[in-house]
Image (tube, rainbow, N blue to C red; front, side):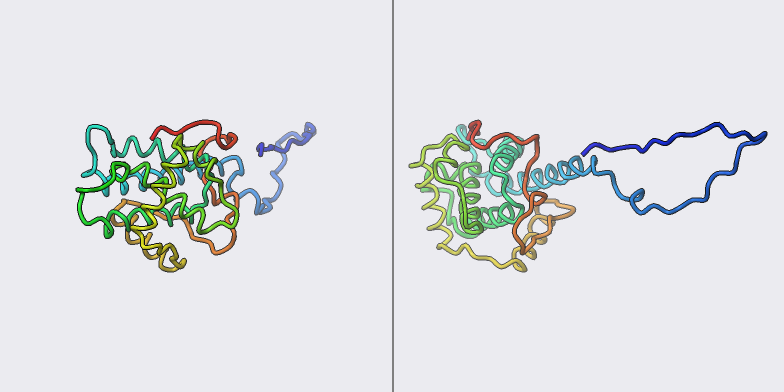
Length: 226
C-alpha cells in the first residue's frame, strides 16, 4: 500500500505577523505505524526465525556430516528460506515440523551407525518433517508431485523418507497448542537463541501467518538443492 501524504491549499495570510498555528487535534491514525513498513518488519521477524531454526537443526545434526553431507547453518538458512517461501507454510506448521525433527534426533535415533544415508542430511529429513506437519494440520495439502517439484527429489525417495520418519516417530504426530507453545519456548529460546516466538493461533492461518520472504512467485517454479 502506498503511503499517501495529504496536501492542502495554503493561501498567503494578510497579516503583518504570522498567524498563530491551529490548535493540535490528536489523530489516532498518525500514531499508527506506516502500512508500508509492515512487510519489512515481517521479513525481519521471519528471517530471524529461520536463523534460529537453522541454528537448532545444525546443532542436532552436525555429528552426522561427512564428505557428502553438509549440515552447516549457512547451507540450512538458504534451504529453509526457499522451502518455506515456496510452500508458504503457516508458522504453526513450521513449529510442529521442528518439533518432529527435534524429537527424531534427540530421542529416536539410538546411534549414528546403521542409519540410511538420507537420515544424515538435515535438509532431507526436515523436508519430510515439514510434509508430515503440513499434511497433519491441513485438510487440503500439496500433492506428492508438488513436493517433488519443490525439492527436486523423486516421489519414491520422498515416500521412503516419509515412511522412515513416521516409523521413528511411532506415528505420534498430534501435539496440542499449549504443549507446542511450551516446547517452542523451551527449545527455540534456550537452545536456538530465539528472542521472540511467533504466536500459535488456533484459528485458520491468515496470510500474515505464512512465510512469504520475498516477492511471491508461483509455486513449483524451481528446485531446491538438497
